[in-house]
Length: 105
Picture 1 (cartoon, rainbow, N blue to C red):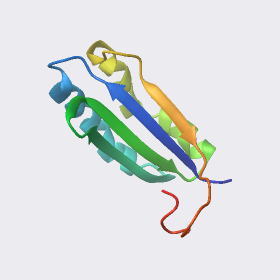
Picture 2 (cartoon, helix red, strand yellow):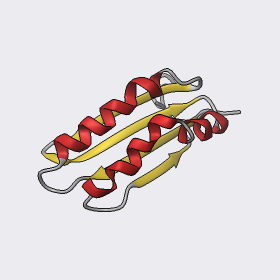
Picture 3 (cartoon, one colour):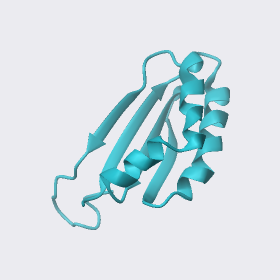
Picture 4 (tube, rainbow, N blue to C red):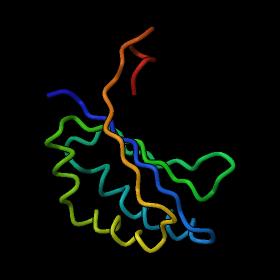
């Protein structure tokens, strides 16, 4: 199976960015320990503390599916009260171009 890249965009209510980041940080360590986790990286949009983005890379669809069933992922549900908008999530496949080492995540 081929790897899967996921981009998750969270738009947080004003004044709740620190709480949201803390909730997400609590999920990162356990996620990094999961089989099949190649990358799971939290980012903040430059100039917008209320927009958090998670860039994920999984070894397979099965590994990603297992990730969603992990106990530590209940933290995502706890974020619902902190969101200004519904979570946006995108599953991506690379479009090869240029240097293969630089042209994909």
